[in-house]
Length: 184
Image (tube, rainbow, N blue to C red; front, side):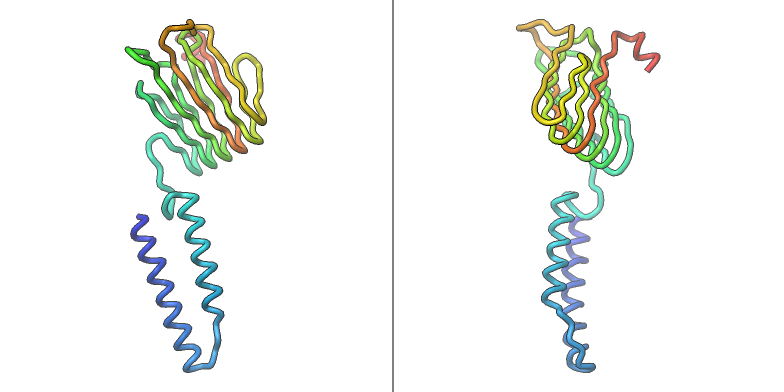
């Protein structure tokens, strides 16, 4: 999709140059073509930066301009919620032989991270003009905060969640075993 848009964009620029030359030669109409092309290039670059390519290119762990419920597959993963709403269920993640690291990014969106209180979890939150609500009642609006679940034992393997929230909201929801899961 990105290559297709790129070809379309540059083709349109060449057509605009040709039309400008024809309009100037035949009808004596002068179009500020240089200014228009510079403006289009800035718009093109902005779209590439914002979306990675034109259109909304997402992976299975990314929510953009929509709403979705995501479930972890027991491995180190990154989740992104951008201009959307999503929940990330980490309550059924099982620790095998190593620490698990998850990254959650919420940008202009709202997200929920669901964890099991009986499992060892350390959550580190970094927020900028946002709200990160932790199970212990702490709220991070600007700056860093952290939370350690009741199931954490120092020196043993654990689940690490690094959350970055920018102009958004993130709620950490702690379930107390499978009974809460049924009611949630």
